[in-house]
Length: 351
Image (tube, rainbow, N blue to C red):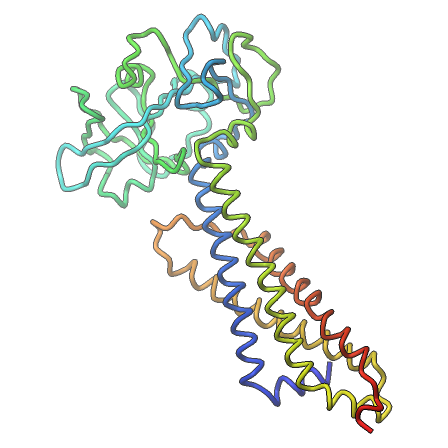
């Protein structure tokens, strides 16, 4: 460790550049992970915040919630931990003021069921009490929408009043407007033939509805449009960057070791054991990786404080720190190449 620290202090610029490279790679990995988790959260915020465990859909919907329609005859008797849920994409327009049109998802809930009664976490206002009232996801506050505004959805004739804002009400990256079942039927144009898109339950229930297809929440989330492809893309990018970090530290240490071979040979001729030299190389690699990762974590923290709320960024610090530790381990693995070279040094070369 003494040799490693002394050499880093003696060659500040050289090792500073290596630390900077490691910090940039770590920062990029942490930011990509934050974007991946942020986008995943915006796809599933409503489902997870409502503690959904089981979803029932139409058997012919091909596991697609937006394509599912269920009738009253298919549902039968609902349990106390089950709720009808219907969604449809809409364009919301504010009747007064300067708020722009917003492409959102309209979601219907029944006032008599557990989702409406227990799971809606309001951040302002109150829950809708009749068919002419809705609540919005809190992100729409930044788009110019406020409690008391009157809005129209699509080309629907009647206007709806915004009476509250709810936390974590997003599905498929779209903010939700939550209202009544009858409003959903009008927007969907079902003429009363269908009463919802499916059923949500906050319990891992047995198959209570034989006419419908049952999915666990994990299966349902994986089938959301674009969700799996998006996460897989980010995971591959993060994986490749971690491999690149391994290669970078290995190459830099290899070059530095090759430049110092005459000095190492002299040290070996003076009786310095191989274990001391290899230990110094490992310590040097670990120091470079730890300093680089800590810098990248600090810069990531600063970025999360400054980044606009519109950017879908979610930093999970336990996961981020685990990835940081993985980078340090990869640095130790990268040090195996120069260590192998050191073990092959012949002291006679110095003589």
